[in-house]
Amino acid sequence: MAVGLFLFQQDLRLHDQRALMALAGRVDALLCVYCRDPASTRPGRYGIAAMGPLRRRFEDQSLAELHRSLLALGQSLHVTEGEPLAALEQLIRTFKVSVIGQSRQSGFNENRRWQTLQARWPSLTFIETDNHTLFTKDQLPFALDALPPSFTPFRKRVEALDIDAPLPSPQTLPPSPSEIAALQAPDTRARADELFRGGEPHGLTQLADYFGSEAPSYYKSVRNALQGWDCSTKFSPWLANGNLSPREILRRLRDYENQHGANESTYWIYFELLWREYFHWYARRHGARLFAFSGVKRRSPLTSFYPQRFQAWTMGSTPYPIVNACMNELRETGYLSNRGRQIVASCLVHELAVDWRYGAAWFEHCLLDYDVASNWGNWQYLAGVGADPRGHRHFDLDKQTRQFDPDGSYIARWQGHVTGPLDHVDAADWPLSTSSRH
Ligand SMILES: Cc1cc2nc3c(=O)[nH]c(=O)nc-3n(C[C@H](O)[C@H](O)[C@H](O)COP(=O)(O)OP(=O)(O)OC[C@H]3O[C@@H](n4cnc5c(N)ncnc54)[C@H](O)[C@@H]3O)c2cc1C
Image (cartoon, rainbow, N blue to C red; front, top):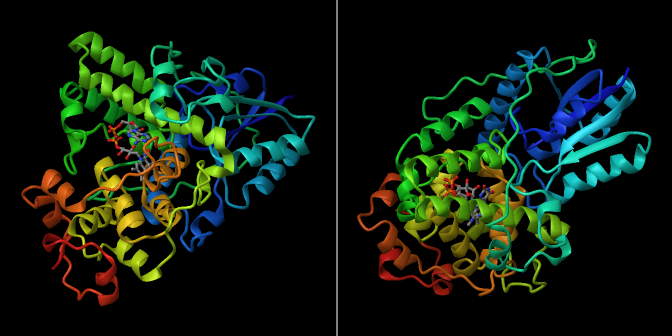
């Protein structure tokens, strides 16, 4: 009897699951596995746990929904709690697994784990497909090591390419080996203040709601706003956890355009999905360089680590009200608009002169939509060590405040005005306009 193991990771869904379908067609019994790494909730390289409580909750919800969907197919989800590689090897041995499958990963560490498994288990068959991206590697019109160094030439080469249709969810799956324990479903009741609820059905609901509204037709004119549910698609948490497939989003976008007409705004949704796409191939192309202080440009910024400044930034108590408001929203909800992310990242690097990697690590801890490629790629970009051909993005905080919060309602909503006394040494260092002072 052939036993297969499918490793769920940032693809917590059943629709558009190419590797799962390929694996299911080859085996008599199937283990559906998710590995929780206890290290992700302990302080890591920057003294910050990779997974904060809000992210963890979204993950729990996504796992519970996936387990429910698998139960409906006579399957179940098995969640391991130890070091992932050791846990997988234990399962391979115990269940005499002969075929193992996963969606191809963009992260360096995840890829290394897969390569280690391949090296240690040469007798196994490994199945891997591109499920996180719109394109497959073979569809790209260039080799990965010839990836364009910035977004625009990448976009121009790929935007007219055909994209495969997403696959429907499976109707049946091989059964799991009877001895395997299924997920002990955690408490995932919704909180009253919860904006985003993890899981494939909730992601599909947001997809239907967004494309069932008129918002796609005016996306471009509002996408830079700091607040407002309809100002952007809000797909990111579900995309990052794989509750939604990017190809499924694109299919709905094309349906919307066929029904209501394409315009610059609907094109811009595709444009932003291509940014995500770019950063995924960028992560695969650059491997561990994604996390390097000097980035892919190999140019070290003139920044350092100042614990007090970093702490003030994370807790929303800098002298900059717009930054504080954004950081408070991020900490309390696990979400922040793209404009807000750009503002606070620029402030950390330029005003506070702090090493960008601490900012990226804090985002990793907080963001429900944390995605290794988009997060570290965007941080590199803003720190001037990544894919920005200009090499330098310094946002004028006063100008951003006037433009994006002209009536002060965003700062008031997220209590950006702190009243503590300003440290005089920092005050001597930082550019503080009258409006930034308290
Ligand atoms: C410093 C920094 C860190 C970021 N970290 C992440 C992250 O960890 N995960 C993440 O998904 N996005 C990240 N982004 C990108 C962007 O801010 C979010 O994708 C976006 O705000 C999510 O909201 P939305 O789904 O409503 O976006 P929309 O504006 O509706 O865009 C649609 C989709 O396009 C993609 N997208 C949009 N902008 C970008 C971008 N600049 N880079 C990559 N993809 C993009 C996202 O998948 C998004 O869901 C980061 C941006 C910055 C500046």
